[in-house]
Length: 157
Image (cartoon, rainbow, N blue to C red; front, side, top):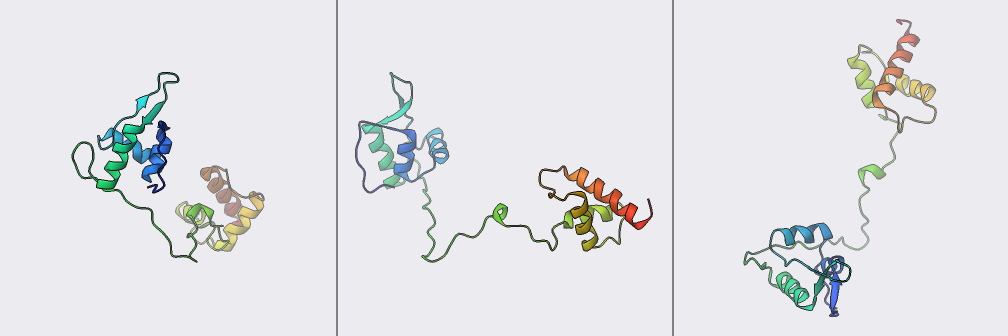
């Protein structure tokens, strides 16, 4: 919530949400639930805005933790990390390791009857069949190609 509140004649929904320390999505949820007042709509451009009186009401709801519907509301504060600690990497940001990189393909091949297939064999087949990697490839087609390739390699095809 902004301690440096500079009153304006009218502000956007995004600005109001930011002043309250909320995302726009959470802000709209609270408006829908009757905790915060609905915006008024500008006659000139039909955009939702919060005039000074509504800004004051929203800030008071946040300050008192009591909605305009008379019910208590809990506002969660943002989590702060101690200085020197960085964010943990997101799952999608991590680079896949080569060890176990094709475990899902290997388990699918085992389910299809190639029970003795080794991790190294699957990795070699993937390198041969998909030299540019399997990103963007249909998982079923990857498994099918690997199955046919490894079956042919073992001489059972």
